[in-house]
Amino acid sequence: MSEEEWRHQDEGERLALVKRYEEMLAENASYFFDIDQFESIIEYYLEKNNVNQAQVVLTYANQIYPDSTRLMLREAQLLANTGKLSRAIPRLKNLLHFEPRNEEILLTLASIFSQLREHKKAVFYLKEAMKHADEEFRDEIFIELALEYENLERWDLAITTLKDAIKHNHENETALYELAYCFDMSNRLDECVTYYKEYIDAYPYSFPSWYNLGNVLQKMVRLDEALESYDYCLAIQEDFTPAYVNKANALVKLERYHDAIDTYQELLELEPGQASTLCYIGECHERLEELEDAESYYRKALEIDAQISDAWIGLGVVEDLRGNLTMSMKHFERAIQLEGDNVDYILLMCTTMKKLEMFVEAKELYENAVQMDPENTELWLDYSDNAYRSGDTEETFKLLNDAMTQAKEIIELEYRNVAYLYQSKKKKEAYNRLEDLLARSFENSQSLLEYLPELENDPVVIQLLDLYKL
Image (cartoon, rainbow, N blue to C red; front, side):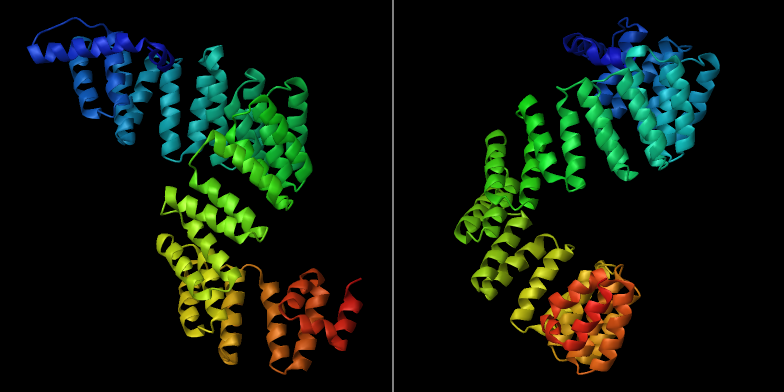
């Protein structure tokens, strides 16, 4: 009996079978069960995660039908389900000698080799299974094959395979979602947009296609078009909550905070009591400088889930904006207690500490943070700023040197080095380094001016910027 047949078997019939089997054991009797019935009972126990009982049934069934290849297959699958993969493989390969066209054997072998990360072998067995699969199940095998190509990072083959799955069954939502992921991973976003638009032309009421199109357009920062796609998606499937979430995100990026709030409120009508959604609304009010409303929503979120760290962070930001720095720190501390490895939270905490001139305390947090995320350029910049504000110039330049051996965006660190040289009255060296940086990466110079606005009034700096901005 195939997995699909099991899935559609009348549940009442299966429960009656299991009850009859258990009655037989209780009465120490001997009832007749055919192979289909034994398979159904075994599957029932596996679905209940009762592997031991499934093994007992299999052992009993083997005594009655010792030559059944179907029971041999169940035994191999049971070995695989219990992590005994190396023992399952030879049994399955042996079964293939007797039934080389058995789709279920081939798919089980593919699954095992996938778990063993031998993805090329998994691909081989999936292709063999495809040759013998019933037409109605082929698109599901296409999906499995595409996932193996993803594991091999063969995005081109994964995309082709997923397109084949959709051709075979244009309503295969899994393939439609997975295809967007593969286009993204292979950086083929323009092609992705073209594909979904063509698909929508053929199937205009496919809400997953409108949704995926919206996502890729948002990634390309074509936000107005993305909003239009989400609206079409919701017009077709008005209770599709992911579209509300991503539509609101796009509105936030456009700084349309009131519209974003309205969208989140619609989401709350579909999914009431979502602490994360309340936090998003709080953040929108925060950006609108509606601090009382922001605080209200953050506290509503905490009433639902006291462990939601984003709400504590939100309260901390609100108090910081009000100038209540000590209270702000208490909220940040609570968030860090809940999520101690979140470097963004640590950065917020340290920023407040610097405002309170708690440079020594901030240094300890920074030291822990750079160990957790040594490639984080923003973290190193803030860490060095803390050292400079504390008056430790030597430590400042040492930190920058350390950062340049570990951080990803070194050019930002070099521009910050210019700022520190300038502030340390080493202007000649600062000018020389600035000229070199402008020649290499003029576009990053804005970060220098944002950190040290007084440079815009320095005639030498003005001259250098005019010289290299062309």
